[in-house]
Structure formats: C-alpha cells, structure tokens
Image 1 (tube, rainbow, N blue to C red):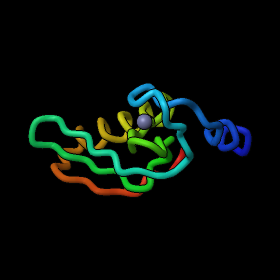
Image 2: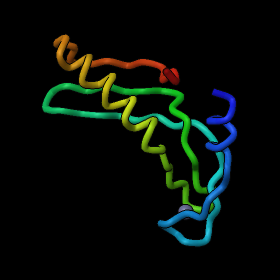
Image 3: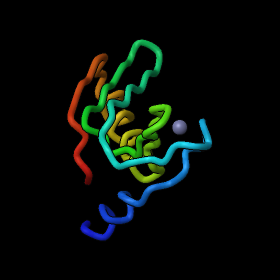
Length: 86
Ligand SMILES: [Zn+2]
C-alpha cells in the first residue's frame, strides 16, 4: 500500500494545457448509467495546478467501475459514498 501511495504522488505534465504540473489531491467522481447515479467523494487524483484538470489513474478507475456495477446490480438508483482504496 505504501509504495502505491508514493507512486501516485509523482508529478506529471498536464496533457490539456501542456504547461501545468499535477499535484496529488482528491476529487469527486460521478458515474451515470441511465437513471443510475453514483458519486464517489475523496477519490485520489492528480490535479493540474494550472487549469484544474483532474487525472484519476487506471487502477482507481477500475475500482470505481467495479463498485458502481455492484451497486447497479443491487438496484440502487442514487449512491453517494467516500472512496476507500481496496
Ligand atoms: Zn493543465
């Protein structure tokens, strides 16, 4: 777990504005499918310090989609939760 956190803190150049650098932070991710809405709070992300573009890594995105599918199959229409790394 510790190693993964350190890796996620590495900065990178923003691909949107091409001048900003990203910094580790947290964001809110909303996923929708039809009438189904799920909102994740406190999702770890790299955020551009120049334009505010947010980057959620592939592993986190996969986890979010798995949780969303699980809620969707249970028939939950609106779900709001704090993201917790598995
Ligand atoms: Zn940017």
